Image 1 (cartoon, rainbow, N blue to C red):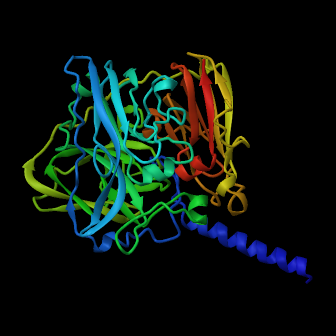
Image 2: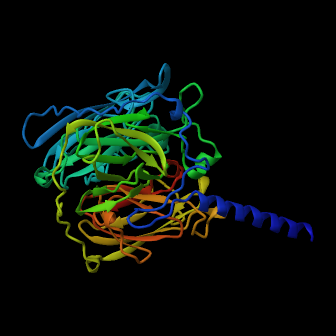
Image 3: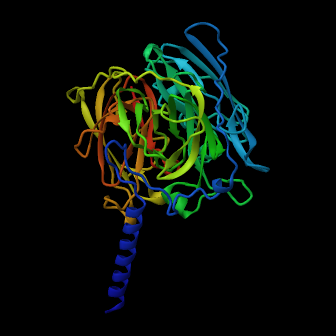
Length: 494
């Protein structure tokens, strides 16, 4: 065999090994899961957290509304630098809103007129993007709305959407991954008359609990830094230690009854496969943009970066002192400790809300968005982000179908299938309904409103939306290292 033949054989061996690697590390979709994803080549063991002391789960405070007038709300939000002890006696440099790490929960109501005074006390510029909020482009907080160090941004917007668990985070061009990783993120909760009327757990911090799940790569001294290597650029930065609300190995004391968990995947890149340690069933009641029509019974839920799920876990059959763990692919990262207190006992409503389905016949056009490339060459439709270029122009109040296809992967999976990367697709300023995945109806927990859609290698997902807010908005992969590398485009609604 000549040298060329030997090279081809070796290349085939490498590709075959890569395909095995991706197949072994790719959680498979199956109803009622929301999609597949890939974690790093480790066994997903939390090496730091295995030696960390358990501590009570921190509950983010509700941010004070400074406007006493009914129907109006005003909040002060400060992006600042600080230090945080994730392990006893070991401080790490971090960012936070109104504190050292993460931020308070902003809670408003549908119909409110909201103003947020955002002050930037970082040494670098930043923005604040209201992820999942349907607002005009000038208030969206994307890359065009930079806040220089020492300056303030005062967006004002009406809340015109149903009850939902949203979030806020930076969206500075080429800096989103670093600033989110350092700690800039917080929940944004909308309530409405329907959420008020439902007989479900709704006592914030007691049986209605926010869970911001993130992963970090800690050094031996208990600190973390945002330093990307070639693997991080290709796959997105993924760590070996999972945090919940900024805590390692937290526990939550829960009553003997139903508890509502508002789960946000706030990680830069990791896709989680959440499951209870006893394989107990739970019910998902809401996705990104609000309530499902009916509760979806689940044994696990997969969330890619930026996706949310509200789930109800029933602890009624547990005894005082019992413990249950929340796991990612079987690895526990937080625990629930059952108290003797009686909790919420009412049966879940069979009907949570009514969602008016958008008829595909109302769509005036279909647009295609194709994820391609890998590493620093990631792109959508063959183009990388150019802030001076509008990629798509949409007419205000028109309905469109978007076809999102994942062809990304390059040598290690460019053909899709089990060899390749997932890409979570997110568009600003709008909520979608999922029409189908590869021609198949979406699972029950994807039949509500979605702003972030996991797209597996080789998969095509069709979604539909009506664009009711004018301005310039982003669409992008929500693996933040991919976004920062250019896997992002702009659409203008006019």
